[in-house]
Every structure is written in structure tokens, then in C-alpha cells.
Image 1 (cartoon, chains in turn brown, purple):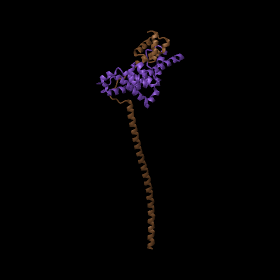
Image 2 (image 1 turned 30 degrees about the vertical axis):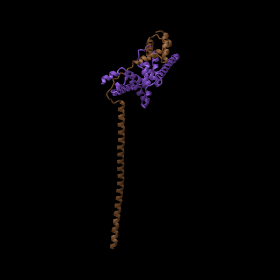
Image 3 (image 1 turned 90 degrees about the vertical axis):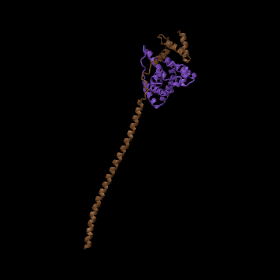
Image 4 (image 1 turned 45 degrees about the vertical axis):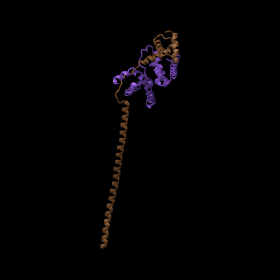
Amino acid sequence: MELANIEKLVEKYLNAETTLQDEKTLRKYFKESNVSPHLQEYAYMFGYFSNTMDETFAQTIELEFKKSKKSTVKWLSIAASILLLFGIFIGDQAYKRHQAKKQFEQISKGLRLLSLNLKKGEVAVSSLYVFQNTQKNK
Amino acid sequence: MNQSDFLKMVLPFKDKVFRLAKRLLISREEAEDATQELLFKLWKTKEKISDYNNIEAFAMTMTKNYCYDRLKSKQASNLKLVHTNYKEKETPLDKKVEDRDSVNLVHTLIESLPLQQKIIIQLRDIEQYDFDEICKMVAMKPVAVRVALSRARKTIREALIKKHNYGVS
């Protein structure tokens, strides 16, 4: 292909007026090694376009439903948050029970003290009775 | 339609789906995931597949829309930061280091184009679809497609010339 023609095509290419056939011609021209220097940038462009075509999707296509990694992570995080909530709930309950036990101990200690003192009082009062009785008998 | 029929049907365009996804999502892993998911979605609609007269164009449209959604979602925007360390694979054009740099530069230049121009240049200059098909895939008028394509090509060319003249490479 003559250089003049290529220059014309390249101009059309820039204006997006080339057909697919024209672009094939350009691709072929720029693949050849002796590209004139003032058209060098097109060689890079078409070189890149051709290279990119080589890239393929190499994985096997999965048509069965498969849990993706992302959904596993999602489910794991849901499970973890439920566990955490549950843990907080249990912990809170245990704390409350502990608190109640402490309270109970304190109250019973108080009551014990009270009853002890009451007993002391009773002993004192009973001695008063004895005193009263002896006075009456006099 | 059974699985092997389906696989035969998608074989001619699965790479195109992948390349478009990669162009838009940038990272290879993201693009691979997207391709798997898109093909799976397509397989799920297999009863309706015969109704589409151009399954390939339909798949490309689906890919474009799917990638748009992915890009919109936060997850993808977080990933963007990671994928700047992209490496182009070895090519037969490696004869000259400078040449390879310039060819790779084209990749970076396309990456910095607006989304729409990116898609159109991918569909036209790499996948070589004709204008009618591209119009359908991107849901744009032919004039608009041509304008976007022309702009994209000119931008890339000018950037390459600039780089060459300044002799940075």
C-alpha cells in the first residue's frame, strides 16, 4: 500500500470514518516493521490493539451454582455478628446473676447482723424481766 | 439447550466479554469474576436465549451494564486503588524496549479516557464490531458513537506524539 493512501486512511481513521475493511488495511500496514517515522504513533496504537486481542478468558466456565468467595465472607460475617450478639447477651445475663448474688450476700449479711443484734437485745430484755419479777415479789 | 450447547454458543464471544470487563474494571480478577457471573446469568436465561436474534450483542450489552453497576458500587471504587499496579503481559512486540513502553502507554492512555470512549474504542478498535452493533450495545446514535470514537483516537494519538517529542521514554 502506498504511503499517500495510508496517510489518507489515517486521517479518516482519526475522524472515525474508516470502515472495518480500512482498519484492517491499516492494521496490516502498521504491523510491518518499516513504518515511516511520522506515523510511528499509529504503529503503537495498532500494535496495542492487536496485542490486546491475544488476551483470553482462560478459566473454565462454571454453570453450576457455586458459592462465591464473597458470599462466604458475607455469611461468615453474619454468623460472627450473631455470635457476638449472643455472647453479649449471655455475658450480660451472667453479669446480672453475679450482681444479684452479690446483692443477696450483702442483704443476708445485713440481716444476719440485725438478727445477731436483736438476739443481744432479747438477752438484755429477758434480764429486765427477771429484774421486774424480783421487784414484784418483794 | 444443554450445557455443552451453551458452552459452544458462548465460546466465540467469552473472550470479548472478558476483555470488555477487564477494560472497565481494570483488574484481571475482577474481570474474571464478572465474566463468570455474566455467563452464569446468561445460562440462567437459556429458555429465552433463542428469542434474542443477536446473542453476542446482548451479552456485550449485559457486560457493559454489569460493569457500570460494579463501578458504581463502593466495593469497586475501593478496589480501584489497588489496580494501579497492573502489568501488561509479555507480547511478541517486545523487540525494542521503547516500543513496548509506547505500546503499554496506549493501555494507560485508554485507561484515562472517559468511560464511554473507553467502551467504544474497546468495541471498535479491539473487538472490531461494526457501527450498527456498537450503537445497539451502548444504546447511542451512530453520530454520537463516531464523535466519541474520533475523540478517543485523537486523544491517544496526541498523547503519544507529545510523549515522543518530549523524549520522556
